[in-house]
Amino acid sequence: RKRVVVFISGGGSNMMALVAAAKAQDFPAEIVGVISDKPDAGGLAKAAAEGIATYAFARKDYASKEAHEEAIFAALDALSPDILCLAGYMRLLSGTFIQRYEGKMINIHPSLLPLFPGLHTHQRAIDAGMRIAGCTVHFVTEGMDEGPVIGQAAVPVLSDDTADTLAARVLTVEHQIYPQALKLFAEGKVRMEGGKVVRTADASDTTAT
Ligand code: GAR
Image 1 (tube, rainbow, N blue to C red):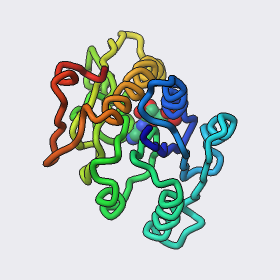
Image 2: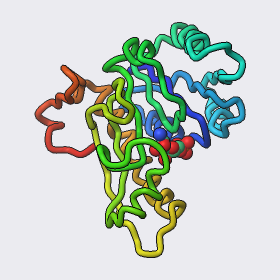
Image 3: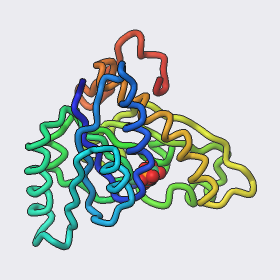
Image 4: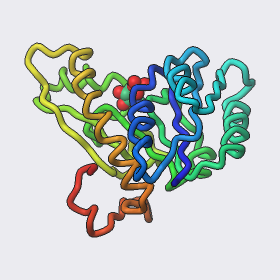
């Protein structure tokens, strides 16, 4: 099984969806560590309760972004992950970090990329008059939220939606597609090559499953 480290900054519901999926005997990956930049992230206690090693690296404890990332590298070197999953990690990684794990790092973003990269995606989708919204699992590359897409899922935008009600609806499908995308990646059915996603034949007509 591939060794996966998950990065969080908050409640960690996507991280817990990955943990739940990885409990299946035939799942091709196991979650070996959870790293947060927020010591009080709710997801850390949930991961610890599952017996998963947890690490918190508060940015303010380090003099520079480089020093912060060096501390994270030390933890990663001890965990020797095959795959990194960003799951609500709200800090931009440096080019050095991204190059170190190029092709091995995936992210979930709460919009149908390339629409609405960045923050406040749900309010922006509502303001734009979108009738569908959704989420994307993609490989991490140096452009923020620009890496090639592994899987997506869509939900309707309802006329009385607020950013919060839409976020909750999108989150339910995030919890479905992130484990599916990780499974595809961990079993070698999708990979990044020359900045594009390559799929095996049996994974070529899928969104995330
Ligand atoms: C999720 O909606 C995730 O897609 C989003 O943060 C939330 C984390 O929730 N990520 C981003 O906005 C990345 N820029 P969770 O901690 O419950 O998984």
